[in-house]
Length: 268
Image (tube, rainbow, N blue to C red; front, side, top):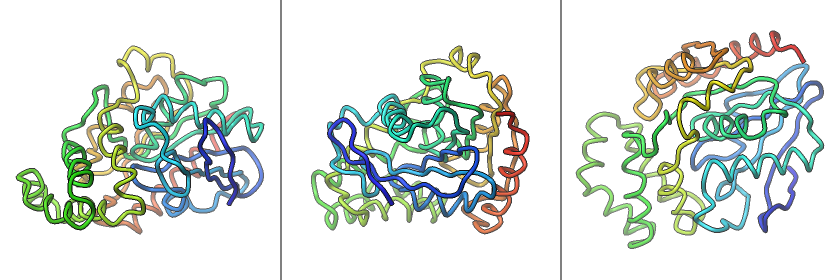
């Protein structure tokens, strides 16, 4: 593990291996360990993973207003500069996919290819599956971790989610057990309320090889979102893998196989 400072924040990152660079971004409330759990070792490639602001061991939180994809892209560009990275395959999962998209739009000179795993946004903020997150933030801020955990279970939206997916409902409850949950509560409001793109017209400029990975039976990451991104990206390639909520190990192994195949097709 290593750290670098940017904009008054100390960011954690890790580098592994040698060869062409792959950079991978984690999801909302996750950290670089989640990236490593998904992506695994990358033979013949160098892998860079990092903790976004308000996540993992990156501290302090910084201004709540800066919890946006544009800021995350700037943070990642600062890490590229710190490490002297010229070009990389850039990707991520869920929130990380949105960060990778914004980074590719703003810093296209550094991107050889794009990898979007289970995208959770389209072209509008506040996706329907994330509408409960701001209420979790409110519960954390008003009642703290213990009181908030009790309060959120009384919400109609939580009960509706529980009836659809016990896994996703459990994910909501786990927000109250995250490290620095109260201090970082703004991420549950601001990040869902942002969007990685301003409109679909922007996507026409992303003329790089793009692997889009989707799965079904996933409320937060609908397969239709992955299908839409693959259709909109000029060089989008859609692959479907087993459902993460239902078959995690098969999901991981299938993704790793698809990524390895994709990486061999990149011309540096």
